[in-house]
Amino acid sequence: MFRLYRFEKSRYVFTALATVTVVCLAGIFFFLASVGLGAFRQISLREFLFGLVWNPTAYGSVSWGIGALLMGTVLVSVTALVVAVPIGLAVAIYLSELASPRAREFIKPAVEMISSIPSVVLGLLGLLFFAPLIARLFGLTNALNALTAALLVAIAALPTIASICDDALSSVPARYREASLALGASQWETIRKAVLPAAKSGLLAGILLGFARIIGETMIVLMVAGNSVAFPRSLLDPVRPLAANIAIEIKEVVIGSLHWQALFAIGLMLFMLTFILNLLADVLVRKKLKA
Amino acid sequence: MPPVISGHNVNVWYNGLHALKDASLEIAERQITAFIGASGSGKSTLLRCLNRMLDTIPTARATGEIFYRGQNVFAPDMDVMALRRRVGMVFQNPTPFPKSIYDNIAYGLELQGYVNRRRIGLLRRQPIDPQAMAASTDRLDRAVMQSLQDAALWDEVKDRLHKSALGLSGGQQQRLCIARSITVQPDVLLLDEPCSELDPISTRKIEDFLLALKRDYTIVIVTHNMHQARRISDETCFFHLGELIEQGPTGVVFATPRHPLTRDYLSGAFG
Image (cartoon, rainbow over all chains, first blue to last red; front, side, top):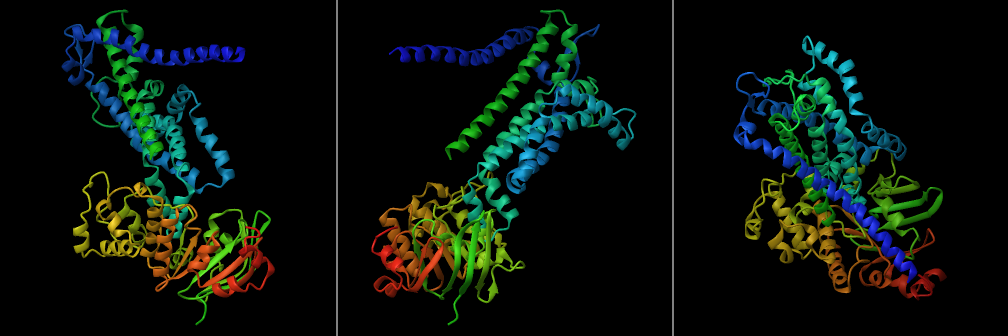
């Protein structure tokens, strides 16, 4: 009975600690919402979402449209995704289907090591190497723009995509591969027509989590995206994505002011976006486990 | 008639473990040859040599010669994919792909360039109408329907061709896998304990199916179950600890085994 009692007690400790994480998540949401939603007492939701000009410190009439910032986020994240998904998938296919066990043992940790590089270091790499390279390639005076930021953010998201997609492919039972080979398929046909379709929900989950990582990335875009609030017309224009905008302005605003609240509203939006992406990925993984 | 497959002094090692020792055999056309023996006797290993599925086991190494209709199966320039199209294989666990029933059967022919107009994708989700299938002139539709009819599965699945094959029972899944293998019209069909996970009624259906297939195909079946070998096979090979002890007509091997080990195994002394 004594042992049982001790077991019961320790169980409370673990339950409490586990609950803390859920409370944190809910707390972050309510904290963001309570400050951020206050902004909409004075700013119309329509102006906020569809206005193109973000100028909260104008002398004349201020404007609160996040259109240009949102466009910056979209340009950077979609380009990053277009770069990171094919490379991430290729790495995953190599690791799970083609690499020898020894090569896999070496390359998989190496890919995952990329995610432990502080993003500020990736930003430095961008300033030092990528930006001059892209400036030379496109004949620009400087290349602190959406394209440079997208390439670096793609590097940051690569380990997430490659690693989760590799897990998805590796969990496809070997007997699917055997059955396909026994029907006269080549190895590539087997990967393309039997393995990839069987892993598709896990692959999609990996891509969504990579996307969430890309949208939330702040330090890299802060350093290399150029930070202009003008509406971008091409990938080679400087942009200021939503996350970077918060980081730039939050240290200059009066606490509790409308501007402060508006920045929290942007934060709330980013949070909800990544939350939905993570939720979707989770649903897909669960669906795969059930099938 | 010359044998379809003949093996001479075939040896297989797994990481130094000598799993198959100097096996020599002949497999006759349009007959069912059964490989019997206890677990670890080398019967599945020899089966996997016949269409080079042994290649999928990285630690395996094989020596000796196997000829399939005059071609040396172990030759380095052997077109393994073409060989497997001629010498198909069905596995112990039913292995339908997580695709629709139709797409499963169509898989092998799609590899050969047939166009699948009925794939269930994100954009096309309409069910397949069995009457439209029966009237269709599309060569893939015809082949899929023919295979399902041969497997006596058509009536059981015709209303859910577009649904996942994973929803079928184990016995249906295994018949689907055999149907999938014969859709590419192989010459030889290798089966690795196809009934070991099935109930007696499903087993019976598969045995009937194999007996019907014998008219057109050469069949090699590995089985744990000596009664099954006796029921359906024409030739029997008995394996013990990596050696092929005895090969002969099934009736002869079961009635008057030449080797004492065969006699003991068949009388249930071990196994």
